[in-house]
Image 1 (cartoon, protein in one colour):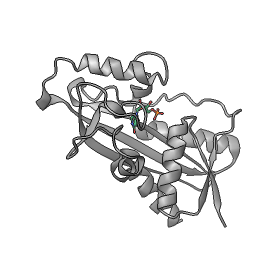
Image 2 (cartoon, rainbow, N blue to C red):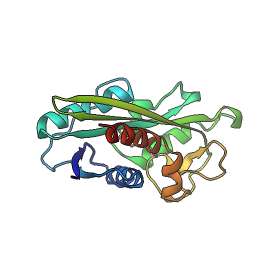
Image 3 (cartoon, helix red, strand yellow):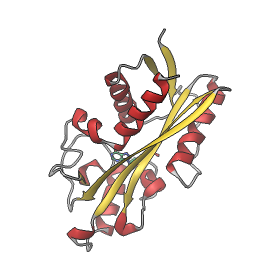
Length: 197
Ligand code: IMP
């Protein structure tokens, strides 16, 4: 029987990515989008794992259904790991991708090529109400470009060049990004945990 799991996000890009990743893993789960009337769960923790668990727990409790949630972001070496858990609201307004990207580019303007290292990090949590909680993490190492390139993906993709690649993650095809991405790694690990339930 197909399990139904709520994905605790309003980001349609993330829903697509997670569906694609779990389907590629042949996991028999139906990903149910967050109901419109579900409250927003503020990300108040200081770690990606803490926020992913916070969101999955809250949505599992409200709906009574198994829930998965992720928290992800960009950690820039030259910015001491920032924007980190503040990635979605780095420029102030939540989810203003263009403003966030421009702000990071400006902050990195004088940083030389050898010190432009960064990581995409994703924590994914799975909560089955009254039964179990689990979280996993994925990390994609890379460097930051000096100008945006590419139109795929979202957020900081146009300036993130994965290690060993010449293209940004916004220039990779979606399946190519999934194969190496922080979210791909985290959700493939989560799929294994869910499959062994
Ligand atoms: P979240 O929805 O709280 O996990 O916020 C994630 C934020 O981190 C997004 O709004 C993006 O700014 C950034 N981010 C996370 N994953 C990615 C990615 O795969 N590509 C580009 N930006 C990402």
